[in-house]
Amino acid sequence: MAPDTAAITDVIPDDATLRAARRERVLAAMEDAGVDILITGREPNARYVAGVPRLWINGSRPFGPGCVIERATGSIHLVSTWDEGVPDDIPHENLHGITFNRANTLAWLTQVEGAATAKTVATDGLMPSTISLIHTAFPAAELVDGEALMSGVRRRKLPEEIRAIRTSVRIAEHSLTAAEAALGAGMTGRRLTAAFMEAMAEAGVTTPTTQDVAWITGRDRHWAQASRDTPIAVGDLVAFDAGLMADGYVGELGRTMSVGGLPPAARKLRQRWDELWDRLIEACQAGSAATGLLDAYDASGALAPPVPVARGLGLGNDLPFVTGALRRTAADQTLEGGMVLALTAYVWEEGVGALYGQEPVVITDNGPELLSTTPFRDQKRG
Image 1 (cartoon, rainbow, N blue to C red):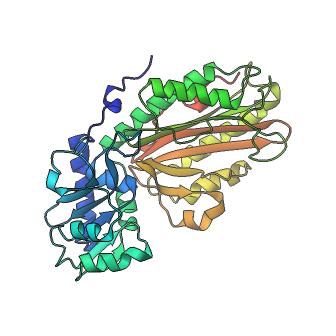
Image 2 (cartoon, helix red, strand yellow):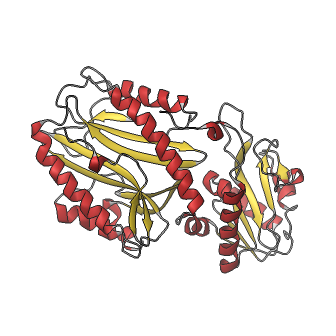
Image 3 (spheres, rainbow, N blue to C red):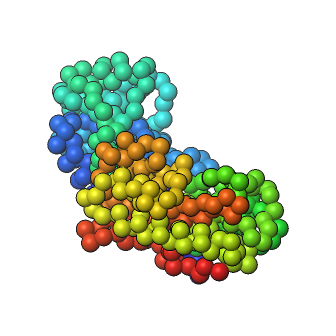
């Protein structure tokens, strides 16, 4: 049965309770950092603050990245060409049309409450050409990094955000079921991707997180992938990477299937995958170092894939970001309650292919919790 996505297809603001909770976190972080005004130009950050649906979907949605929040009053100024999808708590006079004119941008920045007296202004992105503009708009302010502030706020999810991610995962599972049903000898990865996209669109979502949903895993080298137009044969291990964005929140999961069930040559590979997965789940504990996820690969004898072993899910990609190529970066990260991870287990054997599985996992004080309803670990092995 297709999920109920009526709310997803409407161009409406994010839920009022969710908006209020997110803004409270942002204002608290600004208070702690001594930031008077925060300028967000990256879409996930802007939506986190403003709660407005994205722009650039067939020209029907007016919100473009760019909003400003002032700490003392909590007022928000937003780049938007009209009112559709804008919450009632952002007044019309605080909406500013998209412009590439420096004078127009300066005019609306100086309208922000406290612009003339702000001591610290943070921004999540800055081009050299706009530094002087910012200093002109906020003459008394020091300019600091706002991306670190927003990354810190967004890495732990509110309960309302976890529910939103769960909804995205549910739609991704529904769409993946359609793609898996189309799997057969002679099918191609491109056509399986089309089946996923069609089911996703019928469910009311038109924003996938990847353009390649299915591929034949390579038997000659680690992480090799056959052409998306190569016909699938009996015995091929076919990986599915299903991801989409619903109401701004990403839901992703990965699976591996084979025509006619898992071939005998891959049975031991499945045992290796199960062992790796169990170690990864065991490492998903609040307060644990993120390097424990890489240690799980080492302990199981599996080579970490070039894609992240774990990365945060939310309004786009959040912290943590754990990859074998950046172990030093992983050492600086700690798993925290409220983080939602796209957790990846990948094992490969020459002459056989690869088993790829990914699950959305929320870290809780009582241990990890899977957000999917059909975990790859529990699926029929063929």
